[in-house]
Image (cartoon, rainbow, N blue to C red; front, top):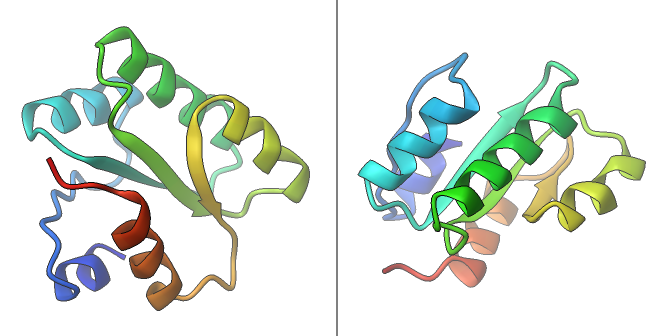
Length: 109
C-alpha cells in the first residue's frame, strides 16, 4: 500500500511492522503527517485502532486522519468509526480505491 500511495505522488513514511500505537503516533506527529494508515491482520483491530485514535486526541492531533484495513468483521467497522477511524478497508479493496479515498479525504497541510 505504501508503494501505491508513493506511486500516486504522496509522501509516505513507512514505519515498518510491529509498531506500537505509541510509536505510530510519535512518528506521525514528528513527521507532521496528515494521515495514519494502519494494516491490522492480527485480529487486534479494535484495540490498536482505538489506541492510536485516543493517543492522537490526547496529543491534540485529532486532525490527523486515521484509516486502515485488514481482516475486520463488518460488525466492528461502525464501532471503529465511532472511535474516530475515518475509513476501514476490508479484503478485496483495490489499491486504486484506497488511493482515491486518500486523495479525496486527506487534506495536505
